[in-house]
Length: 391
Image 1: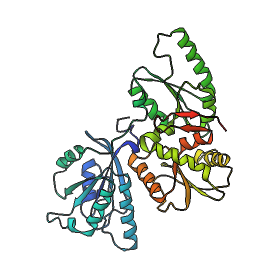
Image 2: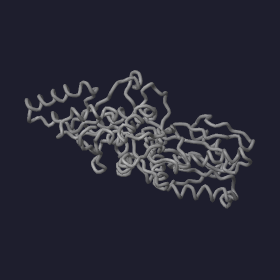
Image 3: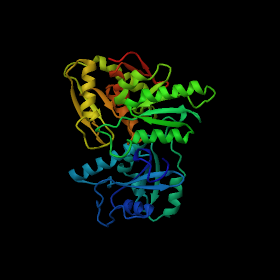
Image 4: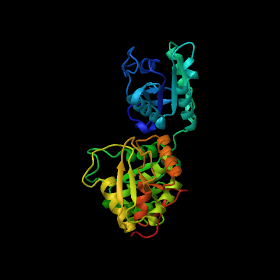
């Protein structure tokens, strides 16, 4: 998934441009991308909302470049624009401050101090570009940045060349037409990159596939490729899959390996324990990092609430967020259940976990929560699950 067109937004390096109004941010973004991404004008405040463009900057690789409104905007509407611009920092790897001119007076302004403090609090790399400087030289400076928060593998470090992994991918009414969902695609690709083999099936075909592999193993005991390293399933099929997979074959889910790579699996496992403490009337936030058309049997709005209430036996109040939306005030919630985060960068998922931790609100994710609802416990050390009896 290293190419420009194939790389999801959540796996790109996010570079955002900040500065005062009319500092030249939009001009720099256009010159850097080689396209008219942002509207350029001498009128202060031309850019009103963040504007993003995907591109590739070697050796950084696939990037998402974002232009923002001036941080010195004024008035009630200007304050809203500034707030929106600063929110971009939650998903920024490299922040570029575009200086207004030779005297660099903006670097002594309270606006710059606020920006710099926000970057330091999030451990974001900060670069400076002075209007009129060589863009190609700046491009090389960008490419030389070494990010502290490097991408983590999903499953590549769990397998060796020649290993065999079975991927269980239900095709139901919520599956996209003609393709697998992104987490499944990424896991299969990473297995192939590691030199492992991936067998893909639906839940009803799993028992027959495992039996066929077992027969092959008995016929060719010398073959190191016949045994199954582990089974990885869509979380919503946990109950059916756990009933079929023998105890000696490790089992996990796509959502759990994403929790390991982008989130905090230990925190998610602790958050799942909070299911036992929920009371009637408690509010539960279900948050997804993407926006998509809701189907009649949608996992986030239909299946998860049903499973959670069946597990707890409580009447709960559910609320939902999607995309970049996430509440500032988490205190009303007794639990947050987050998606795997395949469309979010790791920094954004970590920021949400940190906000839950600061508010004292437990957080879990789809895979860990669904496993818990089916009497299955995820291990934060191995990311595999222990099947202790489905409910």
